[in-house]
Image (cartoon, rainbow, N blue to C red; front, side):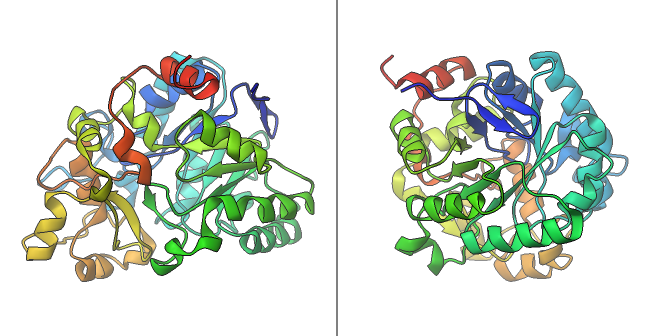
Length: 366
């Protein structure tokens, strides 16, 4: 099967595979640059950029080297450096930035990403009703929301068209098998009607009502056969995150990569999160510490996401998500939070981005 190029706004993605934005520090300049260089779409995560390059772009750090407040946790200077370094790898090929809608300083981070040279902004973790307003001074920037239902897409398109005379350049539909935060509550993640293969076609039909922009499938997609199945259901592209952790170019620490490789199927679970929705990752020592009430104290240094209410939700679930994701980026096996999609246990080797894309396009044995 030959995969047709994917059109997102004015940009053409030769290989219709989007590398998911993974933070903190799992998809930054090395991974995103390599993916775009090979013809797919590299995506830089905006989460926790203040820890990039040994924290040298964060103006203020706490005693344990945590960026203080959103202005440092989401560092504009770091984003500029990350995009600049990715450009050295992929040249003028399209690059995207993923900005979570639930973060504090959302508009500033979107604007910072556009100023730094992002061609495409992808936003999930909430319905990004204000995204068109954020990019109004950047007419060439394509905008791509992440939704979990056709109803959510309909609401978003109505509001965008009415308030901003703008529609999505593409939409990502994410099912509940993805790594990190989910778009459904815990029990909803298990319902048959919320599985990706049952979400795609209604969203494809809804997109046609608004101009037929491309629908991109995400959540649990692992190999060539999965991609073909999504295309048969009407998707024009796929987004894949966890599979790209198993590449040499992935910005994650070796300990992070090894944690995914060592994980068994039963180790990958849904957990409570300070964001208010469940998150999927590998059950590690951190979760034992949470159960034993010996996890590190919640101090809310970074004030990263609005739903956490300055650490109040973090205290309820027993951990600070910003601190523990930063620990994972640093390779701390004792305190780190290691996100993974449901299929992460299938990861058994580290290969190049080029080799991975070849497997995804032509099949594992080609």
